[in-house]
Length: 138
Ligand code: GTP
Ligand code: MG
Image (tube, rainbow, N blue to C red; front, side, top):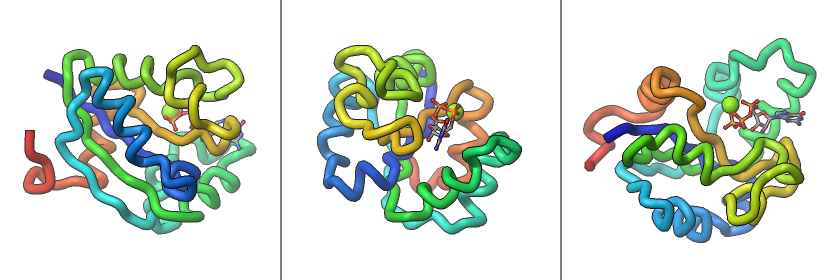
């Protein structure tokens, strides 16, 4: 079994959609084995999205991710990284497939409801940024 790291972004908590998004995650066969609601600090958001720091939207992205609470999660399942990317849908909700989380819930390319790791290696790094082993129960 593989693990991936997920964030329910501030647009999801603001609209009280965390349960609705979790229902889609669980219906896809992914288990939520770690979950915590936090307010991300600017430092945490800048570190987490450091790979995008030269992009024109970096400032906006950090502002958004610190604009309200987020839910950080560890998801477990077969091919969890790829499966969750599929369940999330395209980054831009206008391009996301029917039934995906972003198609159903996302408001824009910036405020797109969820994050999911893009590789198993990045999943390990991202999980370690927010969880210790004691916070995960499979
Ligand atoms: P994540 O799972 O959040 O990493 O999304 P992704 O892998 O589908 O997209 P990517 O890693 O390329 O971009 C990371 C995040 O930056 C996106 O999820 C958006 O929140 C944000 N982002 C990407 N492109 C744009 C953009 O053109 N404008 C704005 N405002 N935000 C963007
Ligand atoms: Mg990404």
